[in-house]
Length: 211
Image (cartoon, rainbow, N blue to C red; front, side, top):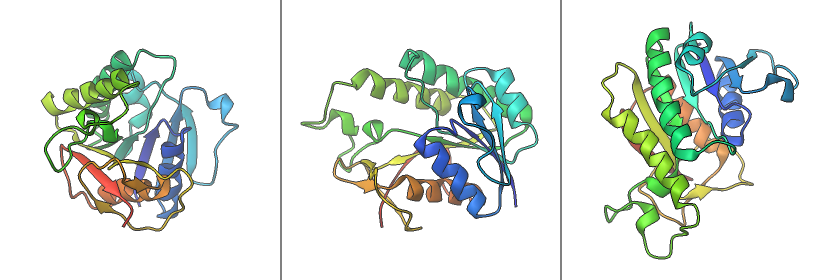
């Protein structure tokens, strides 16, 4: 089995990714801003460390010796565009230096395209109160798209939104953006670890939903 580092391991998507990776026997490094808030390793095979996803040196240090990385980060105190652009740049820089070839990023459905070819956030009736946050995610993805890098990245998001109370079924399907679509955190994690175990999609934004 491989070694996976999960940045943002304290959030719901990050915790689900850690759990799915351990379920399959991978060793996991759970990187968070403040390990003291999380009380130590959550299970055998999980190492809890401090890591700053916006600092290339920190990313390189934490990721050294790993086979793949997952970024499921969010910082409510940060300016969103600065945070997601900085995180994308630092991840590409640090992972390249650490010779980690595969990066999975938990993205946002709002910037995923619908079957009509427009971003979900631009469809009639879609909530606009957090548009600056949507655009910040899009800007981070654009950093990945335009970078000259050997890191094989993939953004994975719900096709619509999370089913916040949903359980793990172990099944999902890829889908274009649809506001009515749902997927559980656990099944999104299945998609993430599938793309590490058997990389199928590359350098794009992939939507997934319950199957």
